[in-house]
Image (cartoon, rainbow over all chains, first blue to last red; front, side, top):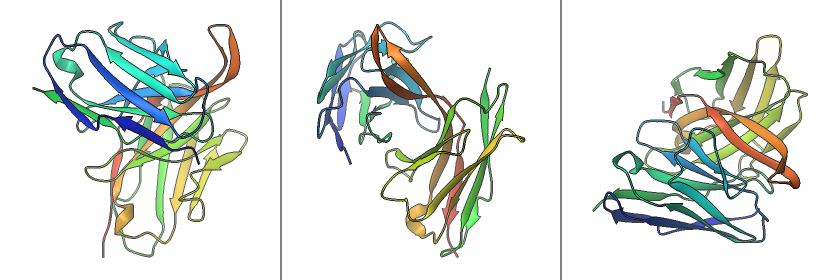
Length: 106
Length: 127
């Protein structure tokens, strides 16, 4: 199976900060990479699919990039509602998730 | 607007079978993939498997020997069975719709993503 890793596992940031989260696949997955946001006690929410396509209704401060094995999720200006855990997911083979990155308040 | 609702027992005894159902409302179960995902307390998301309306399935290799996902198109439902459960199977279980598209920004491919989720149901394995 293709393994997914994320870094960092957690980060502390302030409102207005630019935040970047990295996801790495154990082998090339082209652009078959999705990003989700999960807040405590709620179901995950799709943010980005196909590495860089913004899901309908998701604010434009979220963006995704990358191809092959290395991907990034960027939040251009962190808002109070963005404090959450973020997961990447490969859809190249199966639908396995990365371990997650928790973004909390500095 | 499509909505998903998980249902089933909240408590299952060790060695028994966990059974959950996801009811799809506001849309047809046909022509989509449907998936189960779980999240143990304080941990990350684990994909369990998915099913297409035709009955074709794909399971996480780590759970494949214990998992069965089935679909009932007449009831607009799909189900999860996980046998021989242990305490390690205690988790919040989510169902989700998996949308598949074949082209993104002019590039052909088979892109899948989970765009509609149920609220989740907690299952505890304990005697």
